Length: 358
Ligand SMILES: [Zn+2]
Image (cartoon, rainbow, N blue to C red; front, side, top):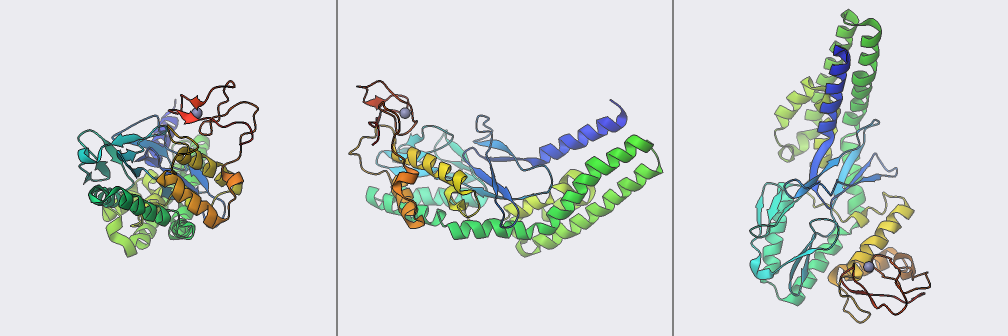
């Protein structure tokens, strides 16, 4: 590797590190710009770091704005609080063992369970909310959860928040795209063709100048919500002198919000219909067909909240809970087919199977 190539690799690596975020393992991230369709990014949920998982933001130009969403991580049940730390079965913590406490973005639930949330403010909100739920009677807990669920499924608010993030970062993202092309494209080509010399130095000078402009744009964009951007001035200084920070300057602005992240299904106006519906089906299956489910079981609170939401959105039951199509008894949660005569799916903790066509 020549010196130039090494420098290029170091810059690329620093840039990728800057694109990494530690997020709740169950988080969803929408990446997009304006009203056009947004894409969804998920964290590497197999990798756990202090109660969260790393997520790689959309790294290639044109630069996108980002908005986070969280499924319901905490759901009250009779025997305790169901906590969804990762994909798969939730954990149940007894109401008496709970001692919710926020520390930065991490929520400590008892002596050994911790959950990473999207911001210190959200960790504080959940510590308070869970303490409140603890004191309530079981039926009041259900009501309190349904109220929270309704707020988090507000599609208009979720769309507005994402579009606002895109508008606030427009200038920063445009210049970031130019910086990306300049840093990884133009300078590399100039270096490759002309080697070390005045031409490369001038290209680097232009890069520095563009970074100064980006720092100014960053300070201007964050002026209305200074408190939500930690170390704002230091960060601006970094943007002025470090290309990787300059190219990702929009991220801190995207994430500076006091609002609670919505439920991912509230992104209906932002996502492709087909993609949204397949997610809706999955959320429904996991909420409705909980371990031990039988035809006669009471609707769990998550499923009740989703059913109200689907009715409000005008989605027919056959769309979000299509009947089994195979000839054999099927598990409504994981979709596995079983030999005739089997009644429950062991993999899903004893979910009652459905006969064909039901
Ligand atoms: Zn199953």
